Image (cartoon, rainbow, N blue to C red; front, top):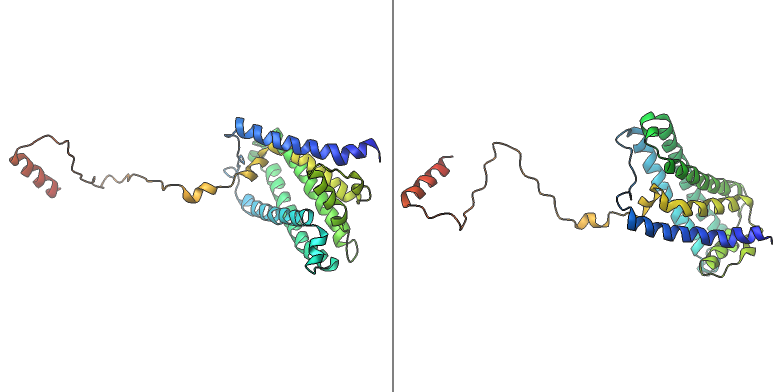
Length: 259
């Protein structure tokens, strides 16, 4: 194993994770007003209404699939009676559908940002870098799925024997880079692209993925005042009104009821 391979499968992922953790903390402490999607919906909404849900819902299922495939050991699924062939179908079919949705959604978002001049002018340099790295991670993963899982034979490539244990051991500081030696190049490219995206994540608009509107359901109601000029003010008694004569009080009452 060369020094470059050791760096690629040990040091590089750790550096990317460190950049992510430090970057997220720094961004939260120094730039909460910039912690936003920088929405461009005001410039164009038709393509956005189609592409954005397609991309985001697809990504939800892609992330769930990654977590299941990488975090759950193969011995656990075997223990509950799920065979390799059954697992392959369970993972590949929904994963491919989710991947198609993400790719189509990303293409729509990119086309919208390039074709619409107003949206293009609102695109910052960090947005361009983000789209480049995001596209590399998504496309490399989609290509790896198609080439090794969909068209790679009846059982595909069993990443649960190499990539999954490599990542789990890496996260507990027990690096085993030798597990990545015989991994297909498509998955290697996807892993490198994914960790690169993780490293730059805190410095782009992708931070909005960690902003869930949890407090929205418990926030107090917003009370608006009526702007109808015909609306009468609600009369209320005040303990600080000056003492008035009986005649003045009767006159005030008559004027109030007459109104």
